[in-house]
Image (tube, rainbow, N blue to C red; front, side, top):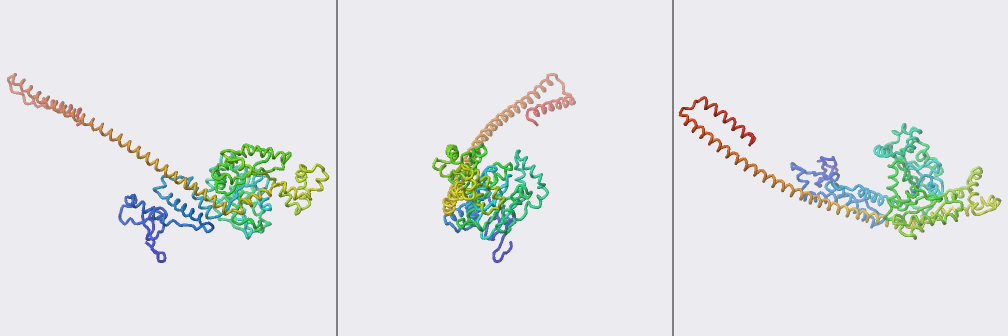
Amino acid sequence: MKFSGRTAMIKCLKCDKDNQDSRYFCSKCGAFLRADGIDSKELINLPEMKMMRILENLKDTPHHKIVWDNVVDSYVDNVEKYKALYEIDDIRENYNSGLARKMENFLETCRNSEFQIAFVGTIKTGKSTLINALLGKNYASMSVTPETAALTKFRSSEKDYIKITFYDKAEWEKLWNSMSSSADKFMEEYNRLNAGDCLKDYIGRKTLHKYVKNSEIEEELKPWTSSQYPQHYFVKEVEVGISNLPAAFPSQVVFVDTPGLSDPVAYRSEITRNYIRRANAVFVCVEAQKLQQAEMETLYSVFSFSKHNKKKVHVIATHWDTLNHPEEDWEKQRGYMYDQLTSPACYDTLEMAQENITYASAYIHNLCRDFDSMAPDEQKKAKKPLRSFLDNYEDDPEEREMKVGDQLDFMQEKANVQTIYKIIQERLVDNYKDVLAKDIAIQYQDIIHGLKRAVRESRALKKELLETAQAGLQERRKKVEENKKACEEIRACQEQLQAYIKNVDIRTNNNLQKILAAMDRKPDPDYMVKGKKLYDGTLKSIKKFVFGK
């Protein structure tokens, strides 16, 4: 025992955790702290001691106060206790890793109080371009090669900064071992960049937090997010704080650019799945031209991870401007999407689908936004796609040439990014606390349902085991009775044989005496001894054969 200030402490002999002297059980592993010569294994298994240990651990479970909502705070208090109870050795035998992960995600969501808007899509569906359009500047990389390999978060901040979190050794091993058979391209790029040579410099490295100028964010991000740099492989998460976002975006609202769900490295895909489950809203980017199998699989996956709150899934048809006749063709494509995505697996009603499916051309929007600040050569390059876009609204080439610079507001309106901004602003950001609280309530009820189901399954399993044990006991009793009966039969047979041999012995001696008397001569002693030995040996052989001795 040792003293920490005025509090006496006692060390757990099992895990070395220091506990207050008033405790009977370790707060970390639950081991009995006060054996004092008593057989702790025998003592700790007493029902009364088990209950005392459970109550003690629950009483001392630390609570992280949630200050922004009292109801959420009560949810957190309960789940913290459920999680502590769930991890006790006697209960962990029926451990459900999925339910444990839900509780961990729930607590993290409540404690961080972030309103997370995840952007998801297959390769090159324009999700990073859309994020840049909504943020008002090109922060996320929009290279022609797939860029997003790590979660990248964007949030409002008083100062501009980037924060880079790296994989630790255990996480990297899991990532490396999760590569599928289709990861040839991953390995080809990894080897081409000689990424293995700098692995030791980044795996397990401490988080890098760096304040930067707003104008430098894009360049500062490239080494950590671009597929052209070897160090991007070892980055687990990137967070970007931006000082000039609109005041309507509170710091709790976070845009999350995610790796693809079909990443050949399964570990990275699983990170995306977890964020979709936790996200308060999910924007899924798909090609406006057509819904291919990859896009449909992504959509179905997102809906399956959001089955308790399908309204949080928003489908954005990107690259809308590439349709032959954007407005006319979109009407047909939108009707097709309504049909495909109104089902029990996706949107429950047509009204929900109509409310949550829209289109955008973030690329055109960004060109119009930045046009006036471009250098002359950049403006010349930008005019080509802008003129092509205006083709859908103006037939006269000369008018188009004149109007490119004059129709920026018109083209931005047609690009429809403002509609998505309005959805985020009015439906989500303005009411983010209410939406967050409702999402948390849904997650909480899901956890309660899971716990009740786990209890029912545990009871059913124990009942089945008990019935099996009872049936086995009856079967063993039956076998014991059968063996007992067989033993009695064998014992009776042995007794009969013993009596029979004894009778044979008596009759043989009597007959021998009669024969010798009839011969009227005294028996030869040597002959009698030899005969007796022969007889005894024969009798011994018979007994050994019959009785085994």
